[in-house]
Length: 413
Image 1 (cartoon, rainbow, N blue to C red):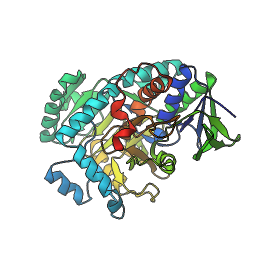
Image 2 (cartoon, helix red, strand yellow; image 1 turned 45 degrees about the vertical axis):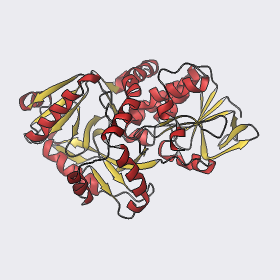
Image 3 (tube, rainbow, N blue to C red; image 1 turned 90 degrees about the horizontal axis):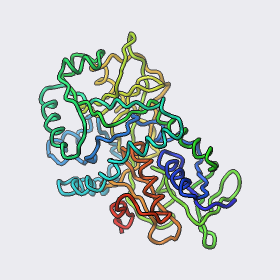
């Protein structure tokens, strides 16, 4: 079977890339070994995060480093056996998180973040998925006055970015979220983001739109990617698929394909968990809530109230470890009346991250027709459609809406 472009990966980034290429006239086949939206795109906190204009940096303060070093914090934990392997990557991440490095990453990411909602909106409307999306923002909550005061100052410092937010003192916050406990002293309600009540369903809806418009989704093994004469070929359940162009958009599995081709892109994995809960005695959560001090999110989902954890540094295939989830659950029950767990076991996902806090989007340096679109870290759902647009504009020779140079894989040469 032959097409113009193969897209490897049916998560939010791959599906969005396929849609944007298709909209520009390409005959596209989307390939994944699993169903669309069943990986990391399924299990996230469901935030289309317009307010995250500052990337998630590595802590620089000595007190923070010492605290995390004890491996007892709820927002970050690590496997002792994995640290030697990931230490060089963490050091690069730490270097890039200096004030100067963070400013570079912020400038690089801003064009993508600024367009994230409008790019989603276009696909949501086209796919008829408005019932999965809320335009009510999310609320960052705080458990003591010192943290709340700092957050208010930090929010004011973001004024140049034009973000809309409301500062909620204790009474206002509890009027907006009536079932929050008195342990919460205030919050920042970020108004620009949108929230998704079924992130996997959103990705599947986008994939259905791609198929409705004439695209093909086929199960296949991206790891079989190879060059055949002047084209690319990958094995599928329907036989070999061949095309002159291929896009690697496999999120955390991208390295399984680019490494055998000789590329040394420092892609690392930040693992994370989720669990769904009932609200105790009918308690209702109206907005997604981030406990900034605890490093977790409570999000109202179709499946129940989803608790998503922060970062776990462990080997991708290590067995799941509930320690971090349990720590977050203890904290969450102090601010909201969670009921019983609804899932038999925690879901484990993997975020694809790069040490300079920006993705790789663009052509490979040494192989004609090979393209990359991965490494979106904590914001794959947020940035999937806008990254798909940029990649499609580059691949088809359009004028790009922003300079793609900051996302080039060549920065790691």
